[in-house]
Image (cartoon, one colour):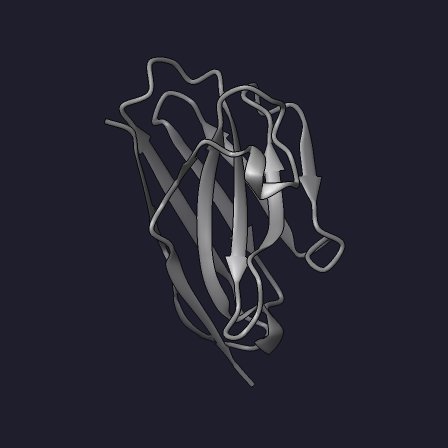
Length: 124
């Protein structure tokens, strides 16, 4: 059974930092791309960042470029999202997802497995 479990969310002041983690279990290998998405209250879920299985290729949403870094540790089956210079508009539930067939897409329908999400709240 595949499971993705996010952690690291919380309440932070604007300008602060958080590092989210997502641990994957139940997958036969680490050859899968990973993505982070977020959903703010009253809004649709949107792409944040993605990373290829090797960690050599990245993609970021324009809204977070320069403030967010995605990385992974395939030994630990963990993907990270380092978020700096947080803004109130970054407030959302953050989800990680696994893309077993592609390089890590921005389109959420291409992902195969999803975590339950972790809440990030940025106060002004």
